[in-house]
Image (cartoon, rainbow, N blue to C red; front, side, top):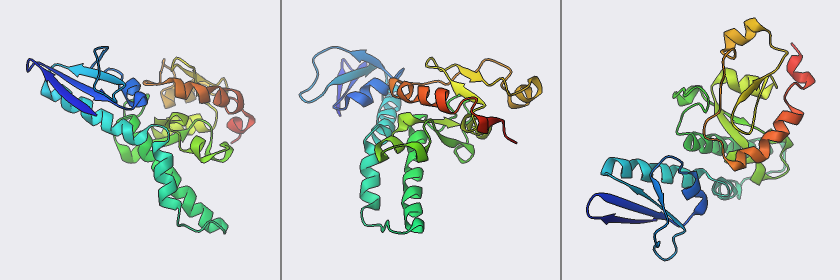
Length: 218
């Protein structure tokens, strides 16, 4: 990362990780000016508080985006035994804890739908479930998850709701009007902050989880 200032009123932050720069969203203004050697993208902001917010967000993303969690996971479990079921469960818990922290960083500790900002209540919901992933890279890909409030996590996991590519939440016909009202699903809801990475997993959920027989069992 590189920092610069112009006329003491415009600050430039340049980044070497393209995925971080792309995920910064509304933080700063993208610039096409010549970048420092090794930088691939940059953002400008107009004051120091905005610069602090930009740098904080970039740091969060650098810890969470694909491959970063996998590298951390590989280091943490390298020396752990994986022979028995109990030992493999310990390894799995390490991965799930990293995945949760990655989603907390990606969504800045807020439910991606409601904005609930109490981390202890939030759930790291896999789009393609952990058990169905073919590789650890899939399991630990933050784009294979959505940070949700508990009731939305349960509804998503059981197939009562799914998410369109534009973030719109679709509710299963198996939920009657009363259930929708109680769950707050009787109004238009949307997942904020979806990226192309999420959209690569969402069809799996729509086709294999949404409205699946499991969702209507008591």
